[in-house]
Length: 471
Ligand code: C2E
Ligand code: MG
Ligand code: MG
Image: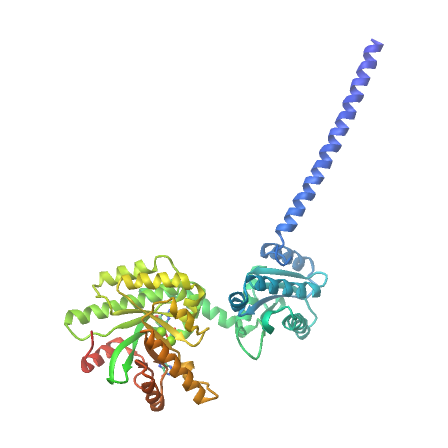
């Protein structure tokens, strides 16, 4: 029995050693796994291109820092490059990437303890910063931005501009989480984006009012459609040679229930940001179809009418189908309805735009390129886009330092466009001199206050009764 006891002791000892080994192995494995997970998390929490935090990680860490340090003054800033798309388009994606990296380096260099920096989307960055006073906060940001703008890595001496909005927690009345602060900083940023004189804005009471105003507008869309508060105005386009109205452009207005009369600039950008603008576009289009059907039924003269379609509606896959269905439902013949899309919309995806234009043509729509002269104004793109009409934006005829040169350009552009068998429309024409010059250039149609302002659709139809239509 003594040997038995001895054997037992040995066995227990072995067991003990084994268990200790096993436990220590498991513990080691546990820690190794945990470290790996942390590393993975760490990687996942960082943007691979720039090393900045991801949005999710930024929100989590920022929330923690803000909660743990109530004694600190914190601000969230939202930075966005102006014309970043241009850099990608003109210099290529590698240059675009390089620029994002350089900016992140400048920002990360500047970061102090308890501060964060994040790349939110393509060329949008966020940061959480501590500050004593706002002036100093802005100065630090400006330093990083200037160091970036002046760096030589940028191709072709191209200068990048950063627009930045700050939201200081002390200025926020509501209880907001980090995402709420980011929204407000973003909103402040938008108030200075593409301004030439100032690139920095602080969220404040007036921006708050504006923001809530937009939220109110955005929320009213559904009821506005139900109550038929959107009105269709039509602005005649006049052929300067015949002196007759040869077509019209439908332009939306909003008559709110409380009696306000809103121009499109005050609500279209809001619906565009909310991506609900398609509802308005379609509403206007259907109203135009309704009016035209009535005209055809009455056997009265008709001219082509164009409608504006925003980028968001145009890039929705069912766009051509829905518009064609409406056109058919109202029995509108081919060649009467014209779709206007802007130069910037077309530039964004030329190949796709080409397909859309072909589809529209197949279904009897005319296609018009709007606001030519406000974007890249690439005449080259007309090779690949078989549009029917090109609208020269009013900007072409304004802000000219050298009138002779400007006239040369306009004459050349109109001449070229006409050779391409594309109809030309000059927009925003207000004076007799402009009309005279455009006639000399051979411009097909003129749309502007010189002839007519946009008018209620019924007035436009009355005008056609007198004028005698075409088609
Ligand atoms: P747009 O399509 O370029 O329309 C021409 C704008 O120029 C109209 O402004 C018109 O009233 C204005 N205009 C015409 N002639 C003159 C002139 O001689 N002088 C001046 N100063 N202005 C002139 P409106 O009606 O305020 O529309 C502004 C913009 O809103 C339109 O620019 C278009 O981009 C957008 N829009 C209007 N209706 C719709 C719509 O139903 N859907 C979409 N997506 N956008 C629309
Ligand atoms: Mg237009
Ligand atoms: Mg236009």
